[in-house]
Amino acid sequence: MGPNLMSTSRRNEVIAVATRAATGQLRAPEVQELLTALPQGAPEKIRRPDARPARWPKLRDLSERTRSRAHPSADSSPL
Image (cartoon, rainbow, N blue to C red; front, side, top):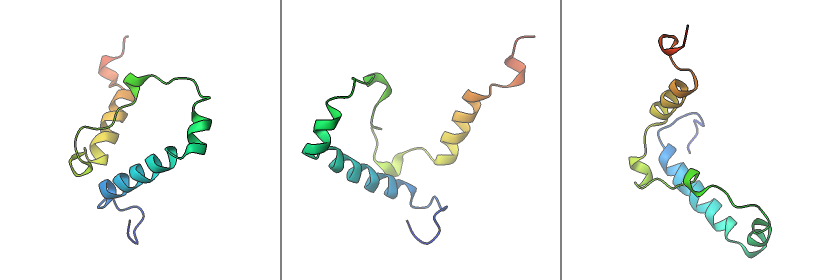
């Protein structure tokens, strides 16, 4: 990540490494045994982005999109 933990300059690289590490850990037989006892999830809510991490949306764009969904503008609220 580098010395500045708040920097987003290597964000995509860090996400890719974390994804590989977590995937490897989740494939361990002892973890697989624990996971089989969990209920099934909703597959439509879980998907891996189609593009490489370098092409993923910028964090700022995602947070703005999430914020606008959580707090619609006052103009659209009923009177």
